[in-house]
Structures are given as structure tokens and as C-alpha cells.
Length: 108
Image 1 (cartoon, rainbow, N blue to C red):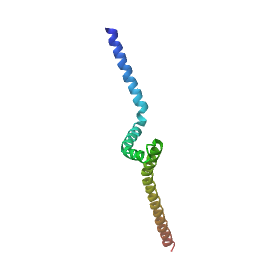
Image 2 (image 1 turned 120 degrees about the horizontal axis):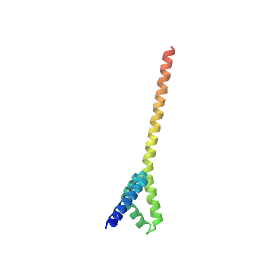
Image 3 (image 1 turned 90 degrees about the vertical axis):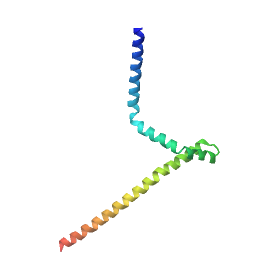
């Protein structure tokens, strides 16, 4: 009876140890897994619609879904990047114009 208890304790100790090691291995990827699960759930109706449109061609439907998801993510990022670049250029132009005026005033 004592040996069976030790076997049980040993089993649960190994199980807890393996669970902790597995957690630490997957820890850097947990956020990516969660985001992937959320996106998969959100875009499943779109994928099903593409399946109907393409007559159940899985590869074409997956490709179209990836393209749409990519555009939904990339287009706002590109737009924001362009706005930041334009704002930076106009800030630098205003700064250079003001610096030139200050230098001309100081030279006279």
C-alpha cells in the first residue's frame, strides 16, 4: 500500500513538472495563439462565405480569406504611416522656415 502511494505521488509530481515545463516552453507564444484563435473565430463566417462562392475549394477560400485579413490589417497601418511621414515633413518644413527667419533677423 505504501508503494502505491509513492507511485501516485511520483506520478503527480512528474505530471506537474511536465506541465510547468510545457507552460514555460509555450509562454512566449501564448499571446500569438490567443490572437490567432480570436481572428480565426472572427473571420470564420467570411471563410464560409468564400467556400460557398468558390464551390468548396478549400485552398482558394483560404487564400482569399488571408488576402482580406491582410488588407484589413495592412491598409490602416500604411495609412497611419503615411500620415505620420507627412506630418513629420511639414513639421520639419515649418522648423526650417522659422530657423531661417530667426537667422535673418539676428544677422541684421
